[in-house]
Length: 236
Image (cartoon, rainbow, N blue to C red):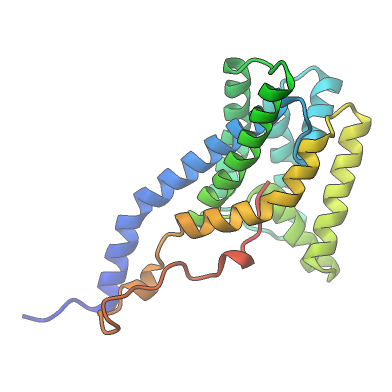
């Protein structure tokens, strides 16, 4: 009786991991929207893009979740001239995060008192970091705003760091002028989100089928995650 071919084993392992990856994608996006809503309710400052989203929400009268969705779709249209290709995760990012954010804002009231506001701020930042790692590790494609960043990087030849900095400074400044919330939460988010996402990526990494399908010739060990977490672009 012949043994299974490596490529057959790889396909089988990929198939078994798709449900887990889809669950991570959905759970991560919902948690991302919910955690962003906690930062809104804390009133102590938002992450960069949500400063802009909140400013536009106050300007237009639309809910912040609707603004997240509409602006995400608009940014996605900018991928066309930049020759970026969206994945399932990219489209889901546009559709899910704003809805999850509005749903959480409906359920969670504003915090009153420094203790409650600080608790919501810390919970929002920590859960946001976990959520980001969850859906990046699912490997279904970047969020629309990160695709804009990488597309501009390829178009201009400038570093990703510079492009990202310019974009985020621009959205924060614009959002603040429109009435978006800046505060200690914004600063704390900027300082802690990188380490939190790195930890989350390690926790939720999905094993790479092309490597782990190989015969157990190295003491039965398998290699987890084809790319190091440090190289993954944070979606927003």
